[in-house]
Image (tube, rainbow over all chains, first blue to last red; front, side, top):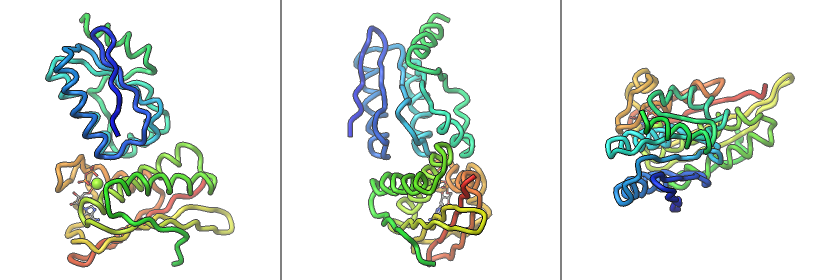
Length: 118
Length: 133
Ligand SMILES: Nc1ncnc2c1ncn2[C@@H]1O[C@H](COP(=O)(O)OP(=O)(O)OP(=O)(O)O)[C@@H](O)[C@H]1O
Ligand SMILES: [Mg+2]
């Protein structure tokens, strides 16, 4: 399944609404990188409000997406991580330390603006 | 043991199928949202390991009831290559596939009980239990 990527000014907005299988996660990674390349976007918000499971594979894909986008010159903020998901990530030993996060989409956009102004 | 339900793992999408069925089970037994997420995540890890390292296998679920408590047993069985050094694969960060190596040590922390039996060339059987709090 393809995850839609919306463009708003210099930003790309993604809301993940499906239970991510490995293939869709990899596809999303590719789609996002080519969209950053095409559009010249400088910021990306990935909203995870509807995601109720992040296992080690999806965590790796998300972490990689952040690093890769950064290499391409776009800052990524992850938003809306559910409490239960945050707790399971810690059990998995995954801390997503270098990954900027925010409570919701709105806070995510504010954070992006701050990061890009620095 | 007589398991209530098993899911075969043959293709990548079965990983998603197994964790959804497992979450349903967990909800029906009475686990809260956080434990449902823990159980679904543990199943996802075990199912992916079967798919990646053994090719095929199955995940089975059973409810257990004791006088004073109730829980869910997850059994992950495959007849793949087996695991040579169990202590190694239980270390955080150990992976033979370029993964995070978070799967098995993660499952152990996500669940309350964890047992692994593996024989090289014969296969692997992992049993994990979570109790309703
Ligand atoms: N069912 C299995 N059969 C054979 N080997 C296995 C099996 N499950 C795990 N292993 C071995 O144990 C190692 C550790 O597994 P673990 O799930 O902890 O990490 P990973 O799968 O490598 O990475 P991650 O799960 O973080 O994506 C694997 O790399 C693999 O070599
Ligand atoms: Mg694994």
